[in-house]
Length: 255
Image (cartoon, rainbow, N blue to C red; front, side, top):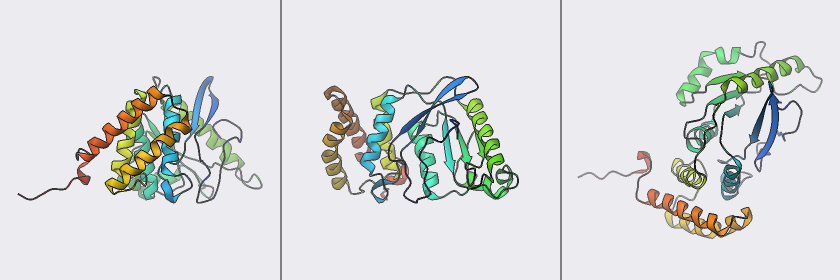
């Protein structure tokens, strides 16, 4: 839709269809934007993307990026727990709350006026309740319909979305040193419970050790990078081990 032609995979399945990061180029008002369709990192072993595969894809994405200018968060008209988890993951964990994020609400074919959805108090209240604060909200129709019955809404939505991207993105992309960035993401997703990591420490460390060599092999990482990443991950794990994570994971003992 953003690019102007049907190139991204879509699915109505509960399992989803994005198994790896895909990139597309879009020309918006004479500027070229590189848009990434990202793997679902919170699906874990209960979804179609195992959590180590998701981490592998995240690492490979980070290695490609020189910076991030905008997050486009798509949702279908209702906030669920996994909606909030993905919001936290991409906005706060991955991008350290340094990148503007816009919410794109789809599935509004039955709305006479698309922007009425965001005008309703209960929808704004839901965003506030989950502490989701987008820079802008785009209410759109992302399908033309079997008989092109939504074509007018689709074309208006396409123009709206492309305009939101143009006016909302950072002119200077945000970035961070790659290994340190990945290690912090790794620690934060574990602490936040966003990915389905094993919660018992011994089980977790065993999984980490067994998976690391395979992970390095699959992404084709050189020895220097793998050693640097291993040190970073072990450092992140030690921080977790010492109880320096979020307060909700700490235990208090009465004196």
